[in-house]
Image (cartoon, rainbow, N blue to C red):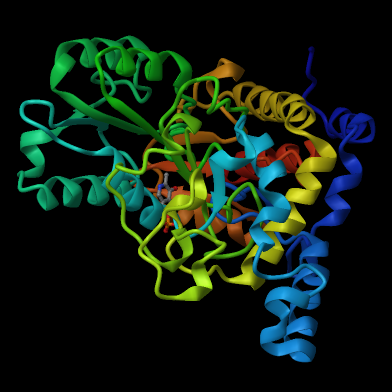
Length: 421
Ligand SMILES: Cc1ncc(COP(=O)(O)O)c(C=O)c1O
């Protein structure tokens, strides 16, 4: 499609946008009396207006029913997570039994590594990205130490080539081949949090499985942002948070996927609590542990209903729109954003996110030479909300459900104004 650098063009695209009615379903924060240009859905998604209704329903039921709400609330709390397992599964290309809303992302990764990082003999290595999200790096290193290794003995990091930002697929495939039968686990972020690069999860998974490793993906920045097919890609496990593109609120309940083929593996190592024990006999309280098949078999505790209500509100919206439509708009909107930045000739600016739409989600990471956090603060002063990552990157995520073509136009105009000042 041919883009134009003008506000009229951006406005026209907003009018033509088939998803333009969805913006109104969100609360857009205001500063200085005006709506901000909110480009940080990659960090915390905006609040869907219906979240309040869903949460209020649970507050009402709690107020009026107390403990009886577990079985008699409008949406009974006991099976609450089952009300959206289908829409959750659809979002990640899974079967409903393969997904569950639970825990928090880092906790879930640990629980999954209890099952899928099983070093034995020389097969003890973990492949991950260099400069993965710090929480993942700490989690992997602590898992290594938990098994009696120094992290540096078993963790194999793959970095971009010198002077590059993106990790090339060939480098990952070559490293898998090189580590070969020493590889116990490959665990990478499906979408890199810093650069916005989307990895070829299908090909990388197949290569790691070929050498006999387990494969897991951190989908924090992929969930609700790019299309994934966890089941068909034969991925062993994945975990995500819901407060970014799923717009379910700060620190909200996370989720995980475990492939169907592990559904009945009763002898997989795992941690246990009453919530992964057989639902039929859970409240008899004195039964020997009897694990639930499927992803629910990784739960430990009864989950926070208020948080799940916000997830349900969001997933109902995703169900209505569908990932196809979200991706169609996303490619166009981020494509327009990239076009505007490229039009703005300034050799201080470089987009480090891949240019191929198949290799990125909605986020663009913009490197600005010699800039520091003051630039980010100046943008905030003029109502443009982005996020800053040291040493010199501004991350901006135009989210298809609530951002507009005019949003990205205003962002680039303001950036231009600040850099030219
Ligand atoms: C890629 C990635 N992994 C892990 C985390 C940690 O998430 P949590 O604090 O929910 O465990 C984040 C948080 O933003 C993230 O972006």
